[in-house]
Length: 370
Image 1 (cartoon, rainbow, N blue to C red):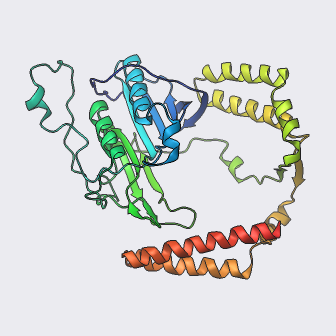
Image 2 (image 1 turned 30 degrees about the vertical axis):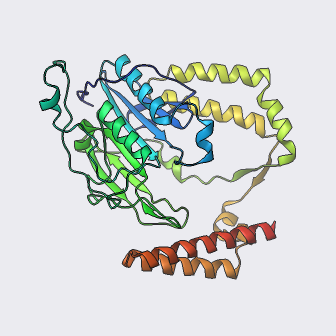
Image 3 (image 1 turned 45 degrees about the horizontal axis):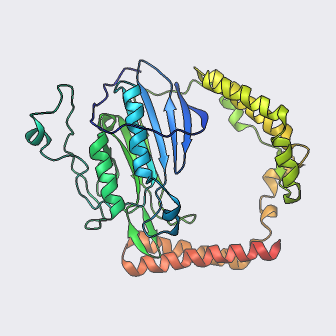
């Protein structure tokens, strides 16, 4: 993969770091670092370029949880971005995504007329923001969190992808619930990554959540092929599962806190930090699975399921699913289709009520069955 020149921005210093885990995408190795409210996924050094993916959640305004947060998540995020940008000499590419609970309307997330206002004191290597048109169905709605998000973008050179790319040029609502419709789930990234976005879409409302799925993908090469020689492993059927027994919570905690397990986890952490390729990651994953398996195998009940039973009787595991559940689900699908065809306020209300009724029904049926 070729090097992509990163931007230089004037931002503050300081950072707070957390735990660590790993992952891989194609030939890119990631390190995942955790911090309150955020997860940071960092790629190891390849051609002196670093990629960071931050999975972030912002507490809604007016929530009682805000009182438990000493430093706003946007401030911690800004400090962290500043720190990694300075450590990587500007060769950093960031993607931040999640439920940010921020209303930004369609206001600019870049400094307007930047060159005209600050030409006298900007450094020679300073890269100005590129003005990009952004649309939003949440037009006219602005919150304090939204102002902080826009300010974060201006200070770091990040830009909102919603309402700008592929199948979301109109900035579709990402939340459709009882309280209304809004754009609160965002993907923001450094602007030089925009040309590599080959898919961005906000999906229609769904059964599982009042938040819509936001799907996006990057392509850094023209031809992408799968080189995984073990792809057949994905077709293997898992015939063992663990059944959690709450009576053994103390036994699980004791086993997990034993000196033997601690030593194994410390060794695993060292292996994780030394990962340089996909094979190293696979080895670490297997080691971690073995550690957890040794801890829980004698605590949780193992149930072996033969493949014939697994294919024949999926519905047996859902004996709690009654005729009422089925009818409620059909009503929801009917209201969902109406909303998709005509997204007016009445259809939204009927769709959200049908979804709530269905979820309440399955919760009751599960409780009664257990």
